[in-house]
Length: 117
Image (cartoon, rainbow, N blue to C red):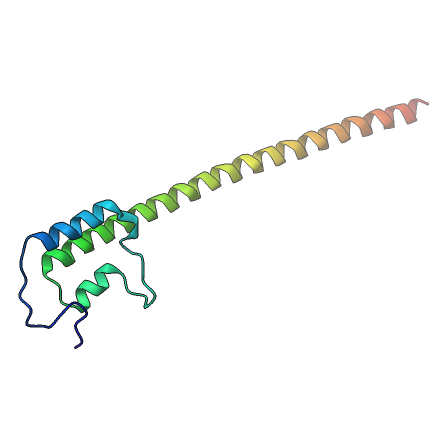
C-alpha cells in the first residue's frame, strides 16, 4: 500500500496533530466532505494513509455532522417548497372557482336577459 502521509512505520505523536485537525474542522466545517481533484476527502485520505484513530474519528464525526446538517437543510427546503406549492395551488384553485362562479353568474344573467327579452 502506498502511504499518502508517510511511511507505515512512522511513529504517531499525539498532541498538536489532532489539535490542528480539530482546529481546521472548527474553522471550516462545511469543507469536511469536500473532495480534491482526485475525488478524495479528508476522511478518505486519513483512512488510506492509516492515520491515528483519533484523527479518523474526529474527521468521521465532523463528516457525519455535516451530512446531517445537509439532510436537515434539504428537508427544510423541501418543506418550504411544498408550503409554497400548496399555497400556490390553493390560490389557483380559488381563482378557478371564482372564475367559474362569475361565469355562471354572468351566463345566468345573459340567459335571464335573453329569455326575458
